Image (cartoon, rainbow, N blue to C red; front, side):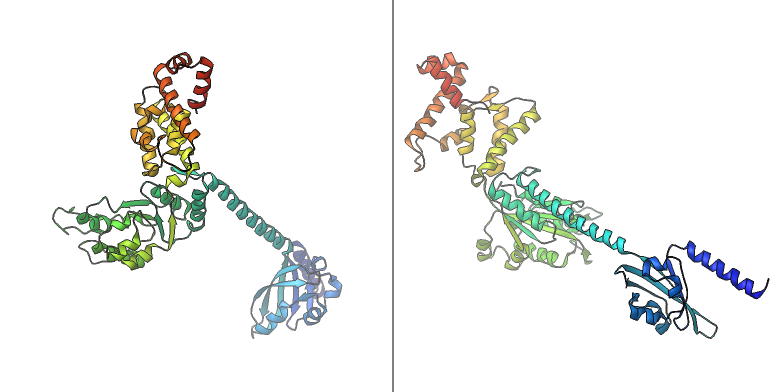
Length: 461
């Protein structure tokens, strides 16, 4: 085979290879003159193969066929280059160019291959838009859920408690210290668990420590743990403290104001450095946790009386969330009464119901013990009421004692006081006889009147 035939066969084979490759190929000599391109070059750059071959990439760059010219960069640097270009059709192209050198290290060829990524970038932008929409919808869904939230005993039907939930939704995902304040029994522990469940540490442990329930002489070893042989009666193997067990989770210090001053300095160091030293030990142990604290005490008064360190208070008090008492959350109270009644009926396999009179009295009571007192009262009513129908006479005396027709209240009219008294009489009569005929006889009224009054005051809910 002659040399000309060999060259022809080689050129034909090279064309077949270029045609088989999906990427667009451009080959130049060591001076940037195009010596070959793939058949798809024209569809990408708008220049025919015949017009491209023999042109300088510098001229093509000036003509705007592609900008910048990657081959010009390779000829200048002598290195392989990958970059994005914009062609004369204003499409995004990703290009890689590789130099081919001879034995003297001179560039004899530059081979570049490119791929149109315009559609890919469009899809990427659409994906980002969808992601933004998804995040927006997720936030809206979370807001809707928070408007009527019942998680682990948390009820937020009232505006004040919904505001608490909104604050929790804002701060839960950040590892910031949170201080929950409010009267005893308002549900601070439940709100702390809610913050944990909504945080990035939800999969980690939630360790609750009631600082007021552990004797002072044991509190340090419970919090920090101890090394073996640290003190008489200690476990021979030592013990891991509750703080150390909180790794990657949430540490909830309930009644944090009860921590004795002698331990407050150590707790301050734990919060600042996230390290602990076990009792009897010398080695610092790193602990990664999120801190939530709670108290029903007035910290300013404690600080003034030197019972609580001011610097520790400010470490705890990065975000303060005040949980309002139940008497300021009437919508929550109404829902909680129904919720607890259903829960205890289900737990004890009973079918107790509240009369309208009993329900009204429960709603009017101030509940100084808040949710804890309400829960205990409903459980006691379900278990001790003689019939399946709970009447005002079944309620504890302290509730009736605090809500009577004689109670002086500028907001209660004479008619309302008389209705309260009438309600008590009708409910008591119905409790004794259980029929409209009996109530009419006891009260000396007609049966139709008895029916109306029973429907008004002893209506089932």
